[in-house]
Amino acid sequence: MIFGLDQIINFISAYSYIAIFILMFLESVILPIPSEVVLPFTGFLIAINKVNPAFGFADAVIASILGSLVGYALGYFLGIDIFLRYSKKVGFGEKEYKNGIAWIKHYGDYFAFITKLLPAVRSIASIVCGAFKMDIKKFTAYSSAGILVWSGFLIYFGYYLSSNWESIASIFEKSAVYVAGAFILFFLLYIFRKKLAGIFTRKWKQ
Image 1 (tube, helix red, strand yellow):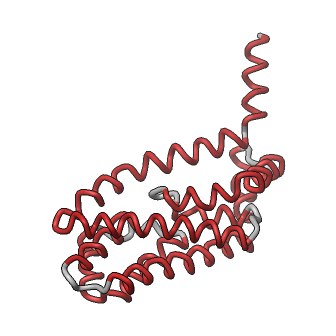
Image 2 (cartoon, rainbow, N blue to C red; image 1 turned 120 degrees about the vertical axis):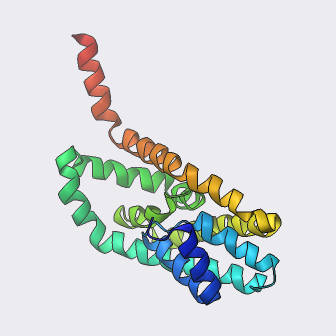
């Protein structure tokens, strides 16, 4: 984590809307800044009248959408070359890449939406969509929908819990690693399914 809890609180407390925008923008590009801390704290500041609810919500959402588009562009123009160069060392080649494209084309709408509702995964989802050439219009529409739901949910809970906002942030922050690991494992299992099936078939025959 680039920013710890204390650093995030101090940064937002000092710079308000600017800090919220910067943190959510960078988190949506790729950096591991926990939105599950930034957003509930924004809700807390709304509850104590330090941040305007409409401006605070719009600030976080716009920053996330713009950051996601930058992440998409990085994946689209740079990600695949780097991706193939290093992933071949672990057996991820052209065939697996084509499987990934097929998966994104088939489930891309759900992928762009659902990944914006998952801790940790949110930070890499845009680059993955860009690298696998998801349609930019669909990416923008569905990822924006996910961002609206995620931002509204966490800001509301921060507002609702008020002085206890850290409890929801702590729960989401602790679960982030497990959610990210499970999602990445599922994605890799799908792409490598034919290779894995071949391995198990050969072992079974032996």
